[in-house]
Amino acid sequence: MKSFTKELWFNTSKAREFINITPTIEQLLKESGVQEGLVLVNAMHITASVFINDDESGLHHDFDVWLEKLAPHEPVSYYRHNYGETNADAHMKRQIMGREVVVAVTQGKLHFGPWEQIFYGEFDGGRKKRVLVKIIGE
Image 1: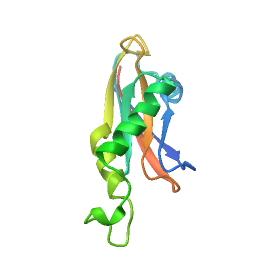
Image 2: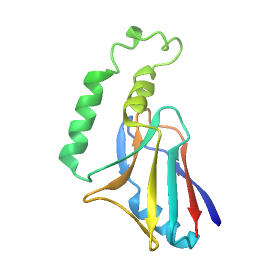
Image 3: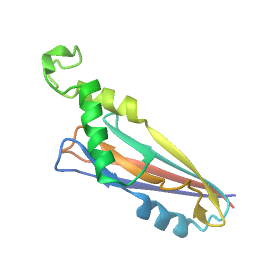
């Protein structure tokens, strides 16, 4: 069995952002040489997410609005976590959107359903964060 590991780094200028990382994951899959197996992609920071959905700007806007309603940034004094910090909402947004995805690899390609893409979700941007990509298989 083959194993391939790579870390991706992100430093967004916006507090919240969704980045389609599918092309990068596809390139790493080619580099790995794995034809049949699994790809794990997970955010290695507690205020960031990796998730699968459609690459449609209206949907991303809707995610942003929905997440802000569920876990509003303001007032920061609302959260017990925010003693010396102001990112409690980002922790909650990450919890909602998820930590990682696993995608099957079939005949050397990501085995997606219609419209599926992999995204990095940032909820407390402005500093370096990483994503782990682990590919295993034959």
